[in-house]
Amino acid sequence: MIRIKDSSTNKLINMDNDHISIYNCGPTVYNDVHIGNIRPIITFDVLYRYLKFIKKNVIYVHNITDIDDKIIDRAIKLKQNELTLSNHYYEEYLKILKNLNIQKMDVLPKVSDNIEGIINYVNKQIKNNNAYVIDGNVFFDVNFVNDYGSISHQKINKLMNETRNTKKLMKHNPLDFVLWKKTNVGISWKSPWNSHGRPGWHTECSYLINKYIGSQVDIHGGGVDLKFPHHENENAQNKALYGVNLAKCWMHMGHININGEKMSKSLNNFVLAKEVLEKYDTNVVRWFFYQTQYEKPLSFSYEQLENTKNEFNRFIRNINSAFTTLYLINKKVKQNIKNTITNEFKQSIENNLDFPNMVKNLWELAKGLVNISKMKDEKQLLNNLSYLISELNIMGIKYINPLNKKNIKIIDDWQYYLQKKDYQKSDEIRNKLINLNLI
Image 1: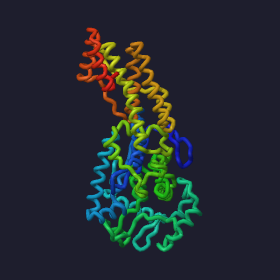
Image 2: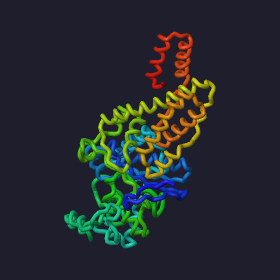
Image 3: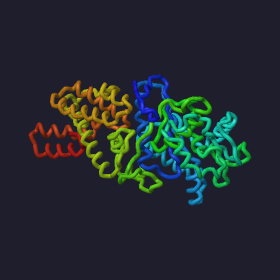
Image 4: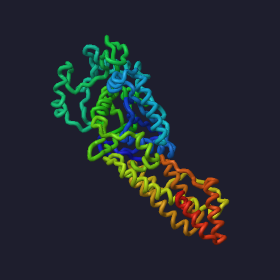
């Protein structure tokens, strides 16, 4: 039974139902995503893969915010159409997902395709007296939620003091937030409130969860910086309409830090994901994120990535070498890799996606291959390789069996010259095998 820590209560929640829903907040596509943006994507990808591995019925929704002030500001600056701009970065984001070996989500909705539904959702809030209209703007009234701040552990009095300047907007409460923004700047849609405008950020996610999942999603998450105000305000809307929290379990990923500071576009200290993927293999990038528990901060540097690359290469060498040994033991062996995992790996992943322990389990299997190879135990080699490849697949690591025709020819040549006792030639070929990570 998989357990995930709910970040709003710090308690582990059992995910024991057959049908599990996931909602992961997606990017605002006004620019290329940075390396911090992909941490939630990789984390949820592992969760999604595992839930499918254990035969759960999963629906995974990942939204795309293609309407936003940041998009409009950039489009104006570049003299482009807003949706043309956002669609460009949406397509670039899809390339990143493909490059990262992220499994396709079940639903990847854009906000621009859901305006009518969002307007109806906002109207529903108004009819329920949870929201009010001022001069074409629609605000949510937080007074209708008695535990506002509970998701993000915010103190209401402190928040009130920090937002006093918003009284100029004539809001009922300084903490009330926009569900529909009246504007004549950039793209807008006609609303029932005698204005043109566009949806508020917090409204879109609440609506999309209601549309594709229902009144409550099992697991909802994203970066820890979304806890407040985004997830708090999503939850408030749902609580007012349906009387339940929007999510049974909230998952939040820790910040990526660079030079001791949180990586962010606002601080201009970010590293683009595409730049990292141009320099490092997908497997290395994913392996880097697995060194730390997903909730904790993670420091990024190219030096650390280089260390990760070297470690991962040592790990893969153990597996490749085992395949080489397997071939030498029995050239006709049927390399039937079973879809199975160890109990240790299962316990680690089901304990709140314990990435460091999952990596430890993988290393123990990989190191164990050395002794098994020495014993020339064909059956045990196949068993351990089955475990490793199945577990790597759950972690989204792409492993390719090295025993292709070209490599087999090199191994055969090595054995041929060894048998002829032409050690100079055999050593030359052996060095080639070492360079290919095959022994």
